[in-house]
Amino acid sequence: EIVLTQSPTTMAASPGEKVTITCRASSSVSYMYWYQQMSDASPKLWIYDTSKLASGVPDRFSGSGSGTSYSLTINTMEAEDAATYYCQQCCSTPLTFGSGTKLEIK
Amino acid sequence: EVQLVESGGGLVQPGRSLKLSCAASGFTFSNYYMAWVRQAPKKGLEWVATISTSGSRTYYPDSVKGRFTISRDNAKSSLYLQMNSLKSEDTATYYCARQVYPRYFDYWGQGVMVTVSS
Image 1 (cartoon, each protein chain N blue to C red):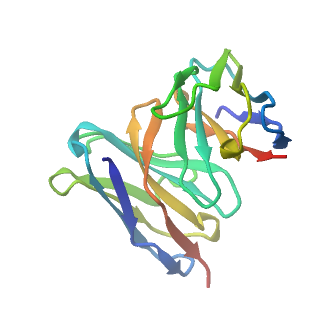
Image 2 (cartoon, rainbow over the protein chains, first blue to last red):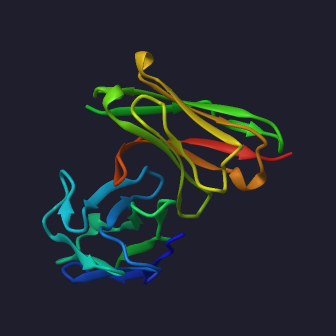
């Protein structure tokens, strides 16, 4: 099973600040996927195929990475970005998720 | 608009069974793989099951294999999860999700809570 380790576990950022969330895989994966989950809501697809933004996702978000190291970046933090973000790998069974990064606004 | 609406959750005793349902609308259900993903209270996401478009292929992680069965009725645009021999660690919110197989889940339902407790 591929284990995905996210860092940090929690963080707080000020409006306008640049934010980077990292996801490290225990073995190489071809792509990474990211979901945003607001408090008491269902997850939403946020980034797919490592760097493609899902429909409606602001372009201040970006994704990058390869092999065992991937990241989600917010260029300028906004209050509405406060949520928990999960990474997910698809192609080694079982499909697995990271444990999540809770992002708060300062 | 894609909609996924789960039902069937509740409180169940350990060792008993429960069947979840998911009603899909807003897309051609028979064209998509479908899945169940769960989230224990205050915990992360865990993939539970996937079913192919026709229902002929199903996939499970070891944690539920042999106890859970995913199925679908394309005529009714409905997805199901039969859960047997339930354990306390199965307590979670269960989400129905449309899967762009094998890659990612592009739409999620609102979730249904399952509590396994005596």
